[in-house]
Amino acid sequence: MIAGVCARCGAVLREEEIGPGCRWSADMHRGRIVGLICPACQTPDEDAEAQFNAETLVYGRDASGRCVASPKVTPASGERVQ
Image (cartoon, rainbow, N blue to C red):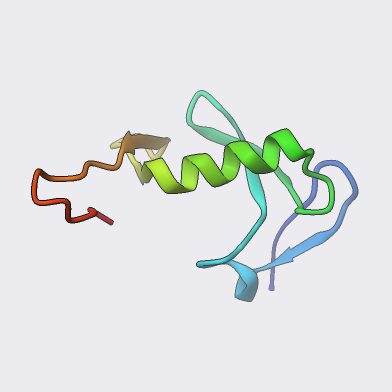
């Protein structure tokens, strides 16, 4: 089943591709996804930003269904929080 298409080239993102290792990026506006960008269309800066965000942020949804991001926290023990 199709989950979305790239806003730039029309490439198809299939549901079975979604998960860890998926390199597609979401274009967000005020907590809502307004477009998807496939790996082939991402600029080097967009790719670097996506990788940085994946390493430093935890994503979830608020009561209104909007996407929200919170920083990943490393406790004093040095254990990484996922």
